[in-house]
Image (cartoon, rainbow, N blue to C red; front, side):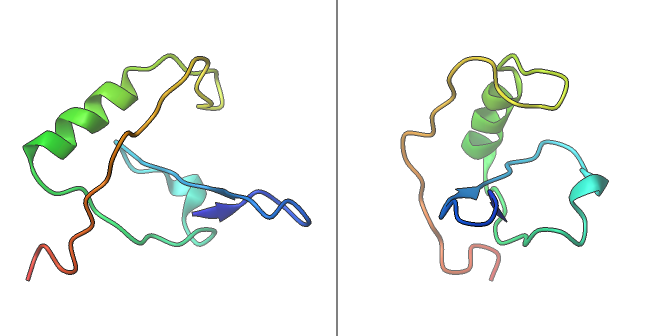
Length: 73
């Protein structure tokens, strides 16, 4: 998650399909996808057209999320 900037009171969330070293040390990693359905959803998001900086050109929505306290325990 990253703050959009001073005075914006907004945040950006990065859901990554591959390593993004340009984000290392700048943002907090706080989640992990679990299960095949989650990976299929990520693949659909990854297929959405984006510009050279990775910003989505159309619309991409996540309709629901399930949060597990510790899915790997």
